[in-house]
Image (cartoon, rainbow, N blue to C red):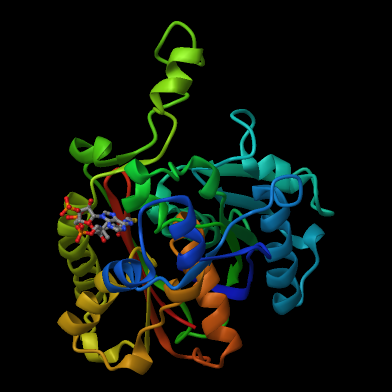
Length: 332
Ligand code: COA
């Protein structure tokens, strides 16, 4: 069966940089606390009226297409991972479709939060493996900063999340030692409310009301301790699942690109896998956690910095709201 491979990768982050000191002006927090618990020094937040999820996704896509040597009209399908779409309806895939010279191709939205990019990659991989499509665009893009409670009450999550977009173009692999080996997807809905944004939900008489707005139920809510505890276990499990599925040892990994949840989580996984620093790529320090966008942004930066070479074994892994978790193992 044919395999798919990443032909090009791109990213975009909004120009506005928000430092930990900037956050300390909005809420009771400080640079030292944030760096010690999360590793984050600064992050990018969108500018209303300037950036949208679609505009950032467009920039990332243009870069990915350029690096793949392709034009928009050569893409057969769009998979768009986001939990922060510009509109409630329709999804972000179609909004991106109208921005570039795509044909009237299908556009699918994926709502699997921090695991969304790997879920999207897996979907795209199946389309290419079966031969249904030859070139699929997979995007992860988010504006999280407008869903954050920037008061003292919301400080444990508002210091973590940020905005940005990443994109990859997937096409058929040409050589044996190339392309996606496998993807592994999981969920456990029992923990849905440990990291969630309740409103505007549809299961109420009126979706939006002054009471609802006053209750703050449209802010992102996170039980940080529960997320941390589950994340460290599931990240390891799903990476080991990918390695054992392909009969590979952890020492075969050339580059691990974990979802940038929290630097402490990435460091824990690195230590468990006994990987040296140059085999793990982190950029949460100046990008924050951009949910579905972290992995493609990190892949794009790693590629720019020459940290991924042709033939390298790259491992992607993610964990997030749902809970959902996922991994992908691929030869670049
Ligand atoms: N600045 C300063 N103090 C803060 C703070 C902030 N931004 N956020 C919370 N605190 C305080 C708490 O109020 C608490 O104070 P208290 O002891 O007086 O009650 C104290 O710090 C410890 O809070 P706690 O929530 O136990 O901290 P923690 O060590 O668990 O760290 C997280 C909080 C969120 C950093 C941590 O739980 C975590 O990293 N979780 C995983 C989050 C994650 O990866 N999310 C992304 C998933 S995709």
